[in-house]
Length: 321
Image 1 (tube, helix red, strand yellow):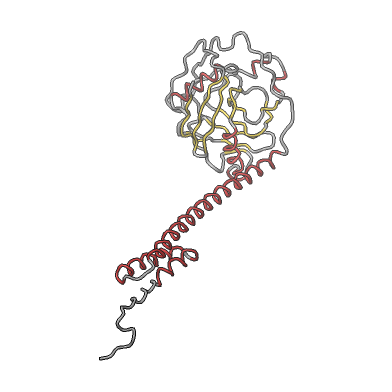
Image 2 (spheres, helix red, strand yellow):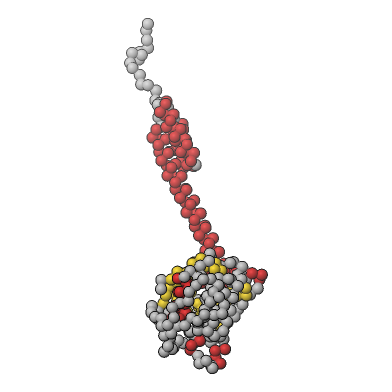
């Protein structure tokens, strides 16, 4: 049998085909990465069985597809977080803008008087019992002389609407600060509701400290006023003239001279009041932002004085003093 002239020479085997899924994996890596991952794994499985070419292409497609997928997920997560943060900032800005709109008609008047410490300041703090029983079991503070140091006592008020940090002014109102820290230490304020919000232009306050949330509750004892009342003579008619209690003021509520107990109010907007309410601290900016949000919610029923629509509950009061 005669063969052709080249039949006696050995030939080269035909080149192996390149796996089509490997090519598809690499292409999809740049078009739709998840599909590139699927095709890449399928391609490697087929190449293992058939011996086709394209393993490098499949691996490249898988690596690029995974990198693109991870990068896409990161970008999406970061974008969502940024959108949420931006939405919150816009909401807070709108609320603050609403409050600024209300504050345009802030009252004007004489400021609180300069502080001239009386010689007997903090020398003999007294907390005599009242005829009304305490609204919640509590012991009166220790009577007698109290220290005026440290000058300031930081207090954290945790509420369901956000934290409010207070800086108690122990140098100006030591008997009042002594009372407040005593009540806080006995957890008197824990779980109580702030019962009164006022939104009139001349008075913007949130009043708290009454366990009954009626405005009539108290600790079963009383004590005298301090600053600014002690800057006036008892017969001075200026005690009846209104002054500006500025935004950020912490003061005691009362029903007359020497009737302080547990109720206090937080001034979120300049308010006109006679100087018969003891100022014993200030409110930090974040706390004022909490109060602003409550104020924007308004008073129940649309009035300017009454329970806040957004109920405020004091969860705890903690002091380092």
